[in-house]
Image (tube, rainbow, N blue to C red; front, side, top):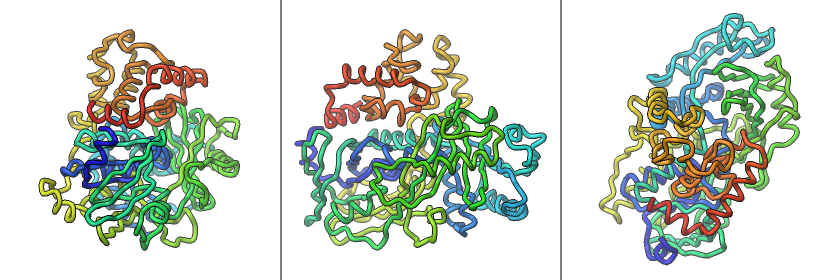
Length: 522
């Protein structure tokens, strides 16, 4: 679709922001028959949505702040999501070591009992008390920790969750424009007139019957500086969360949740096979969300908390990578950043064509947020689009690649290995995790490694890169090696340069608009 074609169309819905909330809303709305245009100023999941702790969880610690409604909602969504995308998420067992100077055991048991029973569990086992002298999770811990608790939550490839929502939205008719900034929006009689700017500086004007401001950390700025008549009664509070990644500190599949003297919680999670992900911090942030980065005090804090529990001590010299993001939390006037609610608020303004602004939220509840957002918009949009359907639909529908019998990833992987006996097992496992049942679209008709094309970097072949460019809006080495995958953790700097050179040679002629068109017709 060319710019000329775009500006002759009145879309039902224009969404600002290609993070998890924007992509989820696009998917839900497109599936109800609405014409959707999503605009993201950078790459999908470029900011907050790729800097999470990679968890699908109810939020055990939020029980201390009496956030029972939020925890229940998140626990309900946890199992919905695990069934929808078993390739990019799965169950994870957490271990909480206990010490006498921390929360008393009876309080933790009570909290875990409540956590297990606030919502129905079908996939995940309940909590239990464990002794570290007979449990594998005790091996890397300091000898002073004798007992603890184990409970269940889930892990997720967060950036891929965003991409799969965008992919499903596009396949249901949505237009996804990455590297396209919304620079102005003005209400007219029956529609919004929205000014866009593409990556090459090309301006564009489009029209939409409703606008969703899902700009995350920029939601307030969009209302103040870009969207005419966009005042709101809510605001976001920007909180920086940082993580460190180190070579793995343990050789078992359990994750840890550590209670710290400052009452904060830190996770240590097995990550990408060879690493441990440790985080997160909670620090008030007042800078540019696009420029967020970990600082020395955060590094020291996370290392100190890890060293409090693990025998193997770490320092800044052990850090392989860091990750920071700005969480746009709903401002509830809490005293400190750690206690700010992780719930969300949807604010609908109908003084003319509808404007819906999204404040707050977390990855685990994104699908429910999207469903509620589209529910609020449907009455006005159905009047203009009688063919649209009002009913919600996403709860029981898998994401692309997630349509496995019984949501059984292990069975799917075993069948995939039999189907491709000549491909390396580690490569097939990575493909299966990333693409699920869409794997054949990535590598077909390959049966051997040679069929995958040029090996651009170790484990990265031309067939996959071409798929990511054509279908998943990838354009740069960072898109491919950090958000579509985490291969950057396993590669040397020269491998990144090799991919950059390959992209310059093979994809340099693409423009954002031309790329968006190919993605839509793929």
